Length: 197
Picture 1 (cartoon, one colour):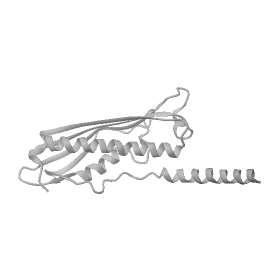
Picture 2 (cartoon, rainbow, N blue to C red; picture 1 turned 180 degrees about the vertical axis):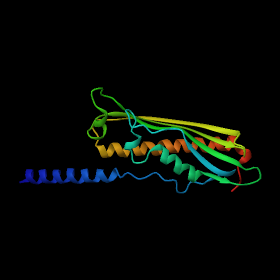
Picture 3 (cartoon, one colour; picture 1 turned 30 degrees about the horizontal axis):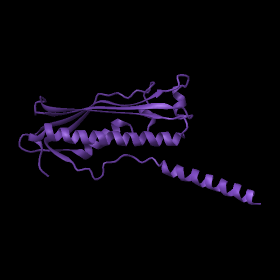
Picture 4 (cartoon, helix red, strand yellow; picture 1 turned 90 degrees about the vertical axis):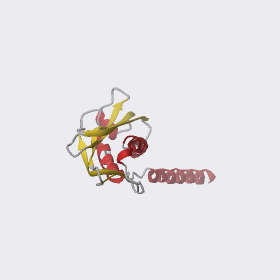
């Protein structure tokens, strides 16, 4: 009798805990609410995308909830505020690289297996962004080069939902590092063109 109750109780605990873990992997879009814009003396902000997303191995940009290009576009809208003042030029953000790659750890696993099985993988995220301040003729006045990289191994004993969640968390961590670097560099290099709040 006690063994039967014990087994039922154990089964219920396992079932409830497995349901709870699914709630822990809720994938939320990265947003920039509450980010204070940096006001720069410029007539407009132009975004130029040199990076072309690839669907060939090892690139997985097209498989994630938010690719890095979309995140950088949202970041620039929240963080970079072009306000025309006395010597206004043009603020240009160039996306050189914004890639997410998944590398096979086990050489026998196919790339398709990454998101259809529990295959282990190494994720690499790479951002290479240039922010230029141009004069009205398009000549470069000053610029900031920003490069951020992250790498993480995802094991073969986690669910596909957990992998998606960890990749999104990794993207959020990468963009926070990028934001800190960008704000510091912009304040250092563009100090003559910054406007007070």
